[in-house]
Structure formats: structure tokens, C-alpha cells
Length: 92
Image (cartoon, rainbow, N blue to C red; front, top):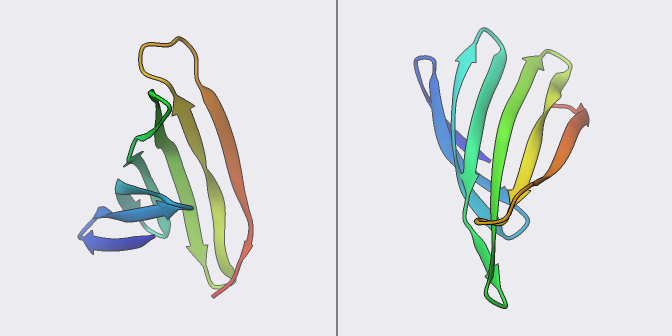
């Protein structure tokens, strides 16, 4: 993840494995919130759309905490798969 901050607006690039995307969010105090749209993946004529729906992390003197949700869906099909991620320990 590479981000740029302009006042409270934050934007940049996200990399999840081999999938890249664009992050847009805001920072308030030490908390970053945002979403990301990832590049679609197409295999055998099936397209998978991936997005980060709710990034929320807080930076403190001991490290980074929080989490984010990844949503996977196939355009034209009902339903989606959701993966909720929690940052257990990230120190700086």
C-alpha cells in the first residue's frame, strides 16, 4: 500500500497478492478510513470483481491496529463473498 495525504484526503495504490487497486479515504486524527476498487480478474470467461469495502485502521505509538473487508463478486450474479480481516499486530 502506497498512500499520499493532502490535508484529510488520502489516496494511493493497493496491492493484494497479484491484484492492484486504487484506495480513496480520509484521515481524522490517527484513524484512516477508506475503500478501494481493485482490478477485475478474468479466467475462463468469468470476471471476478474485488473491492475493499471498509478500511479502518488507527496508528498509535505501539503500531497499527484495525482491519478491512474484502468483497468478491461476479457481475450479473447475485450474492458476494466477504472476507473480514483484522490486523493482529503490526509494529513500526
